Amino acid sequence: MKKLAICFSANGAKIIEKICKACGEHDITPPVPLAITSSADIPDFFIRPDTDIASWTKANFVPGNALIYIGAAGIAVRALSGLPKDKLTDCPVLVIDDAGRFVIPILSGHAGGANKLACTLATLIDSIPVITTSSDVNDVFSVDTFAAENRLTITDKAGIKKVTSRALESKKVTLSIKDYPPKAPVDVVVSDETDAECLLLLKPKKYCIGLGMKKDKDPDEAEMFFLKTLEANGIDVSDVYALCTIDIKEDEPAIRNLRDKYRIPVLSFDSELLAKAPGEFTASEFVLKTTGVDNVCERSAVLGAGTGSRLILKKTAGSGMTIAIAERVGFKSM
Image (tube, rainbow, N blue to C red; front, side, top):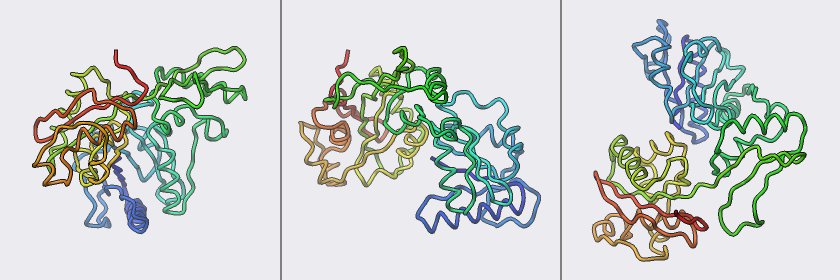
């Protein structure tokens, strides 16, 4: 995700500087430093938005961003008014006080990773993470964290509250699958052990998307091509397990944009491993000369989807990029 840290005073700027320095020491991508203040004591490398905090927040409260406010929590709360819509898609928001004593995730703690980011930042600047989500403070099972970590789709977000309520009441919550160990991806049923009520259904994600593209491909064009391809094949973006590509392309801005905006992990493979992918693929001499393997999108999709997977969309080219779709083993298309 792209982290944006914004302050409103010279003290706040010092906190951001401290974060950026610590990130550099630990090989972590630092946040973009911004300041909305009339103070002259702000480092030259800070960006100074020519707008008010409410307008800035509205423009940047988008998927793929993490907003970090250095100052009073009330500033962030007022700036966010009317923007949060869905706990599964809202971007993570954190507040750090001007003295750098506390790091407080206030939005998207589980699904967006704000709680984990808070703990990371707190470690970097030697402060205290203030976690307020019920499942964390009571040390009980968090179903939305479980779903995110295991790449499962939550079919009904209302079920999250049901599961958490049971856990907070010290009632047993049962996770069930048809067979164990499963031979293929299967649904996970979350239920109440006392009455066997199904509280929530977690579904494994079916598809791996293989991507190849020219260097510095425009992220907006790539995203449009990606979404159109999914739509044409009847696939919802929430059902994408991974974005797959060759290792020399994993840091392309277009791929990072898809990764961050839709919270889809990237699986990358070197040319030697791609060449060993099982199956028949659409070969290209040009791709072979430039990457060391004759096909990137099909081969990476198959490797990402695992042994026994199958291509449901072979190499499709457009706008300086290629895409292929593999269905993970155990799924059967309708």
